[in-house]
Length: 248
Image (cartoon, rainbow, N blue to C red; front, side, top):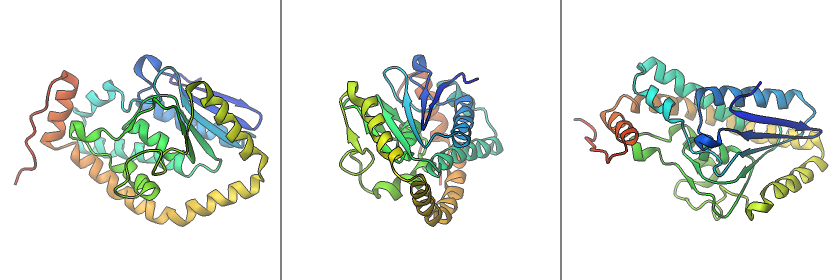
């Protein structure tokens, strides 16, 4: 059923494994759709906790290169629709009614860092690297910033010290630790967990939704700038960009 991820639902625990190791689990349009479907399936099941991890050496390296190349050919309307699709996925993860544990087994960049950020608990191996690297190609981490600034503040950047990561554990202990945390959550009252998360989400939702609309527009607009086109081209061509900056 799934081509870009694996979904295992065993009793009260569901595990989603991003499964494109040859692409460092990069996000494609298909992966976004399959993540939405997997979350729907978990919500319909008896699973009370979810774990999100990656196959291979990376957690998620951000957007797929083919998807990036396609962006350069999109119209403003298509860019806005694409931005809205990303926002919908991120908001779905953020507001998911069951606790989600991110088990970050390696690099988590750009949108991949967003997936890790949006989990309720984030465990990481010492070698894991986090980064919103969009600015390197003239892009903008607009959508995820709506959630990131609420989680760790405006000027905080070190993952463990400032709340992006809940705990750092050795690689051979990552999944066992995720399962231990899941068991603690499963042992708690399901009504209390569900109502607690609903309370947190519902109180923040109006502000999040307002800011997301602005972020969607900014995400789409920057794709029309010369610097974005140059940054994307230089990235795909593996050369240094020649920035033009804003035209007056």
